[in-house]
Amino acid sequence: MPKAYLTIDDSPTAETEDLVDFLTARGIPAILFVRGELLEKNPRAIEYAIQKGFIVGNHSYAHKPAGEMKYQDWVDDLELCESLIEAAYLNCNLPRPKKLYRFPYIDRGDGQKNEQIDMATIKENDQTLPLQEYLHKHGFEQPFENMPSTCPNKAKDCLYTFTTRDWMLNNKHRGHHNIKTIDDLKARVDADKSLQEKTHNHVIIMHDQLGLFDISCALIDYLSEKGFIFQD
Ligand SMILES: [Zn+2]
Image (tube, rainbow, N blue to C red; front, side):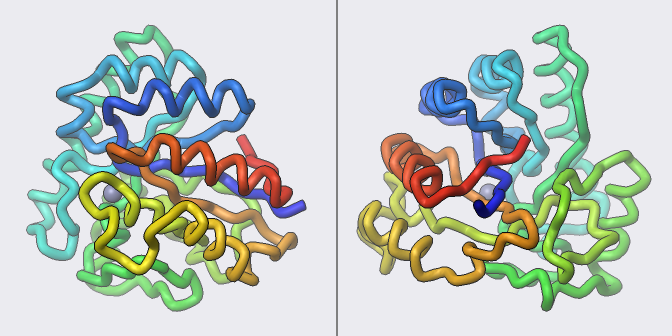
């Protein structure tokens, strides 16, 4: 059976608590990568997720591509989201298990914004290294085990191996892309041969965005039907 980690970007929304309840009912663990500016407006949803045992990761405050930011602005943005995440754990009276960071658009500082990254082609360079150094110095970790051998082993940000492209069906984007229905998302899963690989764990990206709740549930159930075992 292929094993996978489920990661959900862009929380919270008005649908977060329903998504948490759905995953809890299915016994599926996930990391929620939160956007600070949304967390600030809706801390209750993220505190609910923390109380239900979900891990919260940092997905920046303002969701800007790092490659278009000055270094210090990137640090300030990351730390602003950090302070909100720390406050959420404090309000729940629970220890924070790990410090995790995922770059918006997976732009790791060099302006490379690839919707489907290929770990084998990701290379550290003069623009990404200072940011990786910052993450390393401040205790951010790459949390996943048994990654593909091509995963850069010093990367401290949270990369992924498969993007579902579910965001193309959110309220804002629905109808504007080649993916138009849940069946198109399922077909992408079926067509991707790399997802059948059992020698390493997969890291799947989904999104917590308005209008996606039913889609998320259907896709998660489909992945489970296909035999994916979601790892803690
Ligand atoms: Zn995002």
